[in-house]
Length: 130
Image 1 (cartoon, helix red, strand yellow):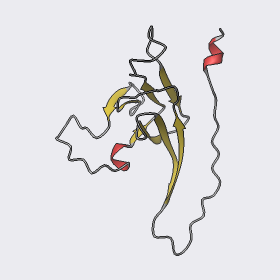
Image 2 (tube, one colour):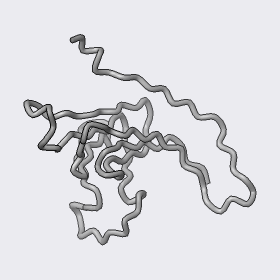
Image 3 (tube, helix red, strand yellow):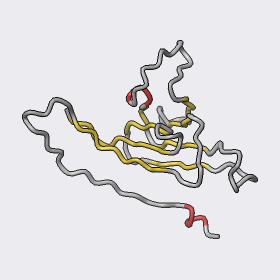
């Protein structure tokens, strides 16, 4: 199998985002990839936040302090410089001889999260307007 068969390229183009005069909140443009085949991120996400290395984060947890959860989506969005990655921690996967992973690379900094929907998705916020 050719290595290029493992790659999928997406291009996201955002036009002007209209907001009305009576709008009380902003609009977020998010690309959300749903992962199939019982993929389980186990609440872990790997992020390139500084352009040098991948850092691991866990949903609703902080290494620096005791996290008092408020269960908000924004509490689990992190900056990414070039990539976001998740691994499949599902033990009943038919791919037992290796751990599957999905990496999304971006051409400019964005905000990203993963696993917010049943531990089976990657979200990248492309634009926010208030």
